[in-house]
Image (cartoon, rainbow, N blue to C red; front, side):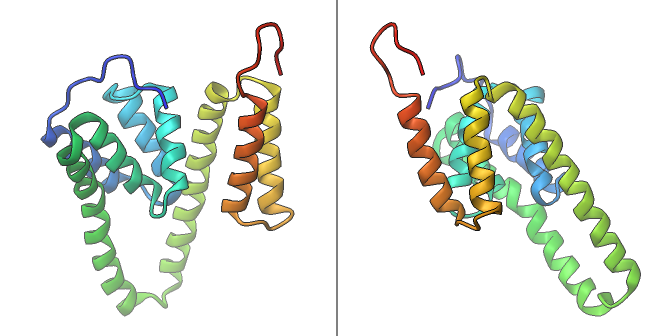
Length: 188
Protein backbone atom coordinates (compact mmCIF):
# COMPACT_ATOMS: atom_id res chain seq x y z
CA UNK A 1 0.00 0.00 0.00
CA UNK A 2 1.35 3.43 -0.86
CA UNK A 3 1.07 6.43 1.38
CA UNK A 4 -0.19 9.77 0.11
CA UNK A 5 2.58 12.22 -0.81
CA UNK A 6 2.24 14.43 2.25
CA UNK A 7 -0.57 13.57 4.60
CA UNK A 8 -2.51 16.77 5.22
CA UNK A 9 -2.98 17.72 8.83
CA UNK A 10 -6.36 17.23 10.39
CA UNK A 11 -7.57 17.76 13.92
CA UNK A 12 -9.55 15.16 15.81
CA UNK A 13 -12.56 17.48 15.65
CA UNK A 14 -12.25 17.78 11.85
CA UNK A 15 -12.05 14.00 11.50
CA UNK A 16 -15.07 13.55 13.78
CA UNK A 17 -17.10 16.23 11.96
CA UNK A 18 -16.31 14.95 8.47
CA UNK A 19 -17.31 11.39 9.32
CA UNK A 20 -20.33 12.64 11.28
CA UNK A 21 -21.45 14.48 8.12
CA UNK A 22 -20.79 11.46 5.93
CA UNK A 23 -22.63 9.20 8.37
CA UNK A 24 -25.58 11.59 8.57
CA UNK A 25 -26.00 12.19 4.83
CA UNK A 26 -25.27 8.86 3.19
CA UNK A 27 -27.52 5.83 2.93
CA UNK A 28 -26.77 2.19 2.25
CA UNK A 29 -24.09 1.41 -0.29
CA UNK A 30 -24.10 5.00 -1.53
CA UNK A 31 -21.70 5.88 1.25
CA UNK A 32 -18.70 5.17 -1.00
CA UNK A 33 -19.63 8.18 -3.15
CA UNK A 34 -19.80 10.41 -0.08
CA UNK A 35 -16.56 9.01 1.29
CA UNK A 36 -14.71 9.76 -1.93
CA UNK A 37 -16.24 13.20 -2.25
CA UNK A 38 -15.44 14.17 1.33
CA UNK A 39 -12.04 12.56 1.72
CA UNK A 40 -10.52 13.02 -1.74
CA UNK A 41 -12.22 16.00 -3.35
CA UNK A 42 -13.30 18.19 -0.44
CA UNK A 43 -10.69 17.60 2.26
CA UNK A 44 -7.78 16.29 0.19
CA UNK A 45 -6.89 13.85 2.96
CA UNK A 46 -6.40 11.08 0.38
CA UNK A 47 -5.64 10.86 -3.31
CA UNK A 48 -7.64 8.53 -5.55
CA UNK A 49 -5.04 5.77 -5.41
CA UNK A 50 -4.90 5.79 -1.60
CA UNK A 51 -8.70 5.92 -1.46
CA UNK A 52 -9.00 2.81 -3.64
CA UNK A 53 -6.37 1.00 -1.58
CA UNK A 54 -8.08 1.80 1.72
CA UNK A 55 -11.47 0.92 0.23
CA UNK A 56 -10.08 -2.45 -0.89
CA UNK A 57 -8.81 -3.13 2.61
CA UNK A 58 -12.15 -2.00 4.07
CA UNK A 59 -14.08 -4.35 1.82
CA UNK A 60 -11.92 -7.31 2.75
CA UNK A 61 -12.42 -6.79 6.50
CA UNK A 62 -15.51 -7.83 8.44
CA UNK A 63 -17.97 -5.06 9.17
CA UNK A 64 -19.31 -2.08 7.29
CA UNK A 65 -17.06 -0.59 4.61
CA UNK A 66 -17.78 2.95 5.78
CA UNK A 67 -16.90 2.16 9.37
CA UNK A 68 -13.71 0.41 8.30
CA UNK A 69 -12.80 3.40 6.11
CA UNK A 70 -13.43 5.83 8.97
CA UNK A 71 -11.09 3.84 11.19
CA UNK A 72 -8.38 3.47 8.54
CA UNK A 73 -8.47 7.12 7.47
CA UNK A 74 -8.63 8.36 11.06
CA UNK A 75 -5.67 6.16 11.92
CA UNK A 76 -3.71 7.41 8.92
CA UNK A 77 -4.36 11.04 9.89
CA UNK A 78 -4.11 10.96 13.70
CA UNK A 79 -3.32 7.45 14.86
CA UNK A 80 -5.51 5.61 17.36
CA UNK A 81 -7.34 8.73 18.51
CA UNK A 82 -8.10 9.65 14.89
CA UNK A 83 -9.44 6.15 14.28
CA UNK A 84 -11.71 6.49 17.32
CA UNK A 85 -12.91 9.95 16.19
CA UNK A 86 -13.74 8.59 12.72
CA UNK A 87 -15.48 5.54 14.15
CA UNK A 88 -17.69 7.51 16.55
CA UNK A 89 -18.41 10.17 13.92
CA UNK A 90 -19.60 7.76 11.26
CA UNK A 91 -21.56 5.47 13.60
CA UNK A 92 -23.37 8.06 15.73
CA UNK A 93 -25.88 9.35 13.13
CA UNK A 94 -26.78 5.85 11.94
CA UNK A 95 -27.20 4.56 15.48
CA UNK A 96 -29.54 7.39 16.42
CA UNK A 97 -31.42 7.17 13.12
CA UNK A 98 -31.89 3.38 13.40
CA UNK A 99 -33.26 3.75 16.90
CA UNK A 100 -35.82 6.33 15.69
CA UNK A 101 -36.68 4.43 12.48
CA UNK A 102 -37.08 1.19 14.43
CA UNK A 103 -39.54 2.85 16.79
CA UNK A 104 -41.48 4.42 13.86
CA UNK A 105 -41.47 1.23 11.78
CA UNK A 106 -42.80 -0.70 14.75
CA UNK A 107 -45.77 1.68 14.87
CA UNK A 108 -46.30 2.50 11.16
CA UNK A 109 -44.45 -0.14 9.09
CA UNK A 110 -47.57 -1.57 7.46
CA UNK A 111 -48.44 1.61 5.54
CA UNK A 112 -47.89 1.52 1.73
CA UNK A 113 -46.22 4.95 1.83
CA UNK A 114 -43.51 3.60 4.13
CA UNK A 115 -42.83 0.71 1.74
CA UNK A 116 -42.70 3.07 -1.25
CA UNK A 117 -40.23 5.37 0.51
CA UNK A 118 -37.91 2.46 1.28
CA UNK A 119 -37.98 1.33 -2.38
CA UNK A 120 -37.13 4.86 -3.52
CA UNK A 121 -34.15 5.09 -1.16
CA UNK A 122 -32.91 1.68 -2.37
CA UNK A 123 -33.05 2.82 -6.02
CA UNK A 124 -31.13 6.00 -5.23
CA UNK A 125 -28.45 4.01 -3.39
CA UNK A 126 -27.94 1.74 -6.41
CA UNK A 127 -27.50 4.82 -8.60
CA UNK A 128 -24.89 6.29 -6.26
CA UNK A 129 -22.97 3.01 -6.15
CA UNK A 130 -22.96 2.79 -9.96
CA UNK A 131 -21.77 6.39 -10.36
CA UNK A 132 -18.93 5.85 -7.90
CA UNK A 133 -17.94 2.54 -9.48
CA UNK A 134 -17.69 4.26 -12.87
CA UNK A 135 -15.59 7.12 -11.45
CA UNK A 136 -13.21 4.77 -9.65
CA UNK A 137 -13.10 2.35 -12.58
CA UNK A 138 -11.90 5.06 -14.96
CA UNK A 139 -9.01 5.84 -12.63
CA UNK A 140 -8.18 2.32 -11.44
CA UNK A 141 -8.61 0.10 -14.48
CA UNK A 142 -5.66 1.02 -16.66
CA UNK A 143 -5.10 -2.27 -18.48
CA UNK A 144 -7.25 -4.82 -20.28
CA UNK A 145 -6.17 -7.36 -17.66
CA UNK A 146 -7.79 -5.21 -14.94
CA UNK A 147 -11.14 -5.40 -16.74
CA UNK A 148 -10.71 -9.17 -17.15
CA UNK A 149 -10.12 -9.55 -13.39
CA UNK A 150 -13.26 -7.51 -12.68
CA UNK A 151 -15.27 -9.64 -15.12
CA UNK A 152 -13.97 -12.88 -13.59
CA UNK A 153 -14.96 -11.64 -10.13
CA UNK A 154 -18.45 -10.61 -11.23
CA UNK A 155 -19.04 -13.88 -13.07
CA UNK A 156 -17.72 -15.92 -10.14
CA UNK A 157 -20.09 -14.29 -7.67
CA UNK A 158 -23.18 -13.75 -9.84
CA UNK A 159 -23.11 -16.66 -12.28
CA UNK A 160 -21.39 -19.41 -10.31
CA UNK A 161 -22.62 -18.25 -6.88
CA UNK A 162 -19.17 -18.53 -5.31
CA UNK A 163 -18.60 -16.77 -2.02
CA UNK A 164 -17.10 -13.30 -2.20
CA UNK A 165 -14.19 -14.46 -0.06
CA UNK A 166 -13.40 -17.32 -2.45
CA UNK A 167 -13.58 -15.03 -5.47
CA UNK A 168 -11.39 -12.41 -3.79
CA UNK A 169 -8.78 -15.00 -2.92
CA UNK A 170 -8.72 -16.59 -6.39
CA UNK A 171 -8.76 -13.30 -8.32
CA UNK A 172 -6.26 -11.79 -5.87
CA UNK A 173 -3.81 -14.64 -6.44
CA UNK A 174 -4.29 -14.46 -10.22
CA UNK A 175 -3.78 -10.68 -10.25
CA UNK A 176 -0.70 -10.98 -8.05
CA UNK A 177 0.81 -13.56 -10.39
CA UNK A 178 -0.09 -11.46 -13.44
CA UNK A 179 1.42 -8.24 -12.06
CA UNK A 180 4.41 -9.79 -10.28
CA UNK A 181 7.76 -8.13 -10.97
CA UNK A 182 9.38 -9.55 -14.07
CA UNK A 183 12.86 -9.34 -15.50
CA UNK A 184 13.53 -6.21 -17.58
CA UNK A 185 12.14 -6.41 -21.09
CA UNK A 186 9.26 -8.81 -20.38
CA UNK A 187 5.78 -7.49 -19.67
CA UNK A 188 2.42 -9.15 -19.05
